[in-house]
Image (cartoon, rainbow, N blue to C red; front, side, top):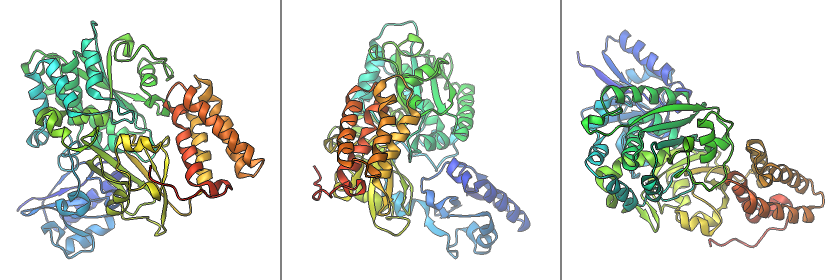
Amino acid sequence: MTNITFYVPQDAAALAVGANDVVTAIQAEAKKRQLMVNIIRNGSRGMLWLETLVEVVTPEGRVAYGPVEADDVPGLFDAGWHEGKPEHSLYHGLTEDIPYLKKQQRLTFARVGIINPLSLEDYQAHGGYEGLKKALSMAPEKIVEEVTESGLRGRGGAAFPTGIKWNTVLKAQADQKYIACNADEGDSGTFSDRMVMEGDPFTLIEGMTIAGVAVGATYGYIYLRSEYPQAADVLNKAIAIARETGWLGNDIQGSGHAFDLEVRIGAGAYICGEETSMLDSLEGKRGQVRYKPPLPALKGLFGKPTVINNVISLASVPIILAKGGAYYRDFGMGRSKGTLPFQLAGNLKQGGLVELAFGITLRELLYDFGGGSASGRPLRAVQVGGPLGAYLPESQWDIPLDYESYMKVNAMVGHGGIVAFDDTVDMAHMAEYAMEFCAVESCGKCTPCRIGAVRGTEVIQKIRQDHQREQQVHLLRDLCDTMLSGSLCALGGMTPYPVLSALEHFPQDFGLEAAPAASQA
């Protein structure tokens, strides 16, 4: 009897909607029908509105069915899904031909959803460890040059050139250096770090190892938030496999290079996503922002030179080394090179992950991929870049998504999180929420953030209550100027972005006269 192979995601999003129940139902129904099945737990393909997305292996390729619930399974067998037949409403055809997936340019997420995340053989069969193999044959300076050539910039939000950061650590003289991976993904509407850690953990391990070989660091830490237990479990298992097979340790694949790493779990404070607060937390202290200088690249973790990159930055390194910096650089536009995994969330029909080169527009993401609003009402505002990102009105949805174009309109691409709102949203309420968020999450070290956010919340409440509205608006702008210029880190320094953008583009929600139609620039 031939085995029937099913792929069922073990990604946290799929587990949340009952993926394990679907697996149990498949096993029970197959037993009842005397069918032999092989179930592989993969990562998510990123089409979250179709989770649980079950794929069946056929001679033509993997055929997708979704969203599947446990109660659907008997009917799906009746309809012949185990043979890839189309006689069921949950049938979507070949997975690779689904337009949402087919139109993407997946470099960093090339394997996510395709492989078994904990199969090293599967990883290598799909190009895994080719980048590290190449790096092990290169001089450290050449590895850094390759990353610099690629144009890769920090995908955590700051967009600082990765090659420059690595070169600073490479040239630093020290008896110990570290690689610190910032996996404290705390921005609302973002999940790309989690998806890659759960769906392709070896690519992060490989990226960190390449970074270690490049700058002379022999140990690394993945700083993970406690809300990601599935990612922690997958990462720890993958690290153990990498050690057992010689891809981590004192002599990586007989090269003479040493590198090892471990996962450290943080409590989930938003401020620990700021790099120096993360270092404090890694050292066992309360996470608080450090003054700069010194830069972490020269005096970072335990006072040693440290490369700090986010998950997506490091996970992008293997393909850069495997295919060359020029290959990666040819994606994107202007100074924004490569691809970014955009994460579609909020009031959209088709939320999920879309990896594309920089230059796509928000309108294309919202409608060509997101399918418009889930509520059926017109979309009105979109927050790009997490809770510190600006709210963009429709007049700005055709601006190319790249770092420089967004800076020109006082917005930011950030970590690629996109949260959409329909026309029922109250933007004054959203502005108040931005200040409340800062007040709750502030580490309290600097006054503009600690006090400014509290006063900002009060001022917006007075505006909404029409209590000396004009004076309060003037006060709010002054307060935002102080926070922008005087805060110690991005939390206080960027909280004014959503507040001021809401005030500028949606003044009627604050009880003010509507401004003339905004232009793109």
